Amino acid sequence: MSDTRQKLIHITGQMIAQKGIDAVSMRELGKEMNLSRSAMYRHFRNKEDLLAAVVAENFKVLHSNMRQLPGNVSDPRQRLNTILRTYFEFGINNYEHYRLMFQKQWDKAQYPDIYASAIVVYELVESCLKQAGNTRKSPNQSTAIMFAFMHGLVELHAADHSEAEKGLNEPIELIESFLDMVFV
Image (cartoon, rainbow, N blue to C red; front, side):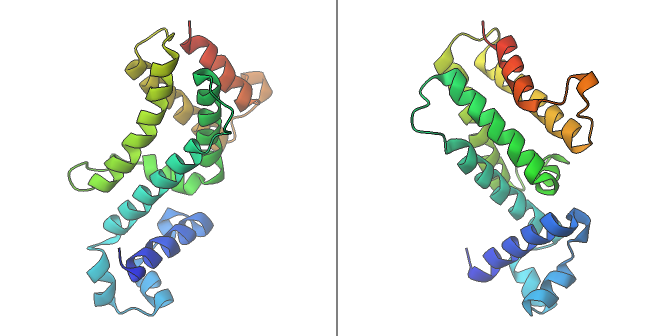
C-alpha cells in the first residue's frame, strides 16, 4: 500500500473521530494533503471506497485489540468475557468508527478486505466458544447471538439509555450475565 493511500486512510479516520462520518469530503482531504482531485482518485474511486478502506482498517484494529489478552487467561469463558469487554470498549470509545463499520452492509464482492478483516473478529469469538464446548446453542449460533447482544449494548449506551432502572447501567455486569445465559 502506498504511503499516500495509507495517509489518506489515517487522516480520514481522524476526521471521522473528530467530526463524524458526514464530515468526510474528498475535496477537503485533498486540500489537507495538498493533492489534486485527480491524485485523490488515483488512490480511491470515490468516497465510499475510501470509507471502505477505513472500515477494513477498523476491523483490523478491533481484532488486534481483542487478541491482546493477558497471558494468563487460559479459561475460554474468561477469555471470551475479556474479548467482549474489549469489543464494547472499542464501540463506545470509537463510536463514529463503529457506526461506519455497522451502519450498512458492505458488499462482500466489492469490498473483500472488509469481509476478510471482519470474519477474523467473528472467528475469534467462535473459537472461544468451540474451546469452551459447553454452550446452550451451537458455537455458530452462540456467536451470532453474542454479536447481536453486543451490538445492542453498544448502541444503547451510545444513545445514553444506560439508566439503572432499565438494568443497563453496568455493561460489564450485563456481559457477565449474558455469558451465564450462553453457557450451560
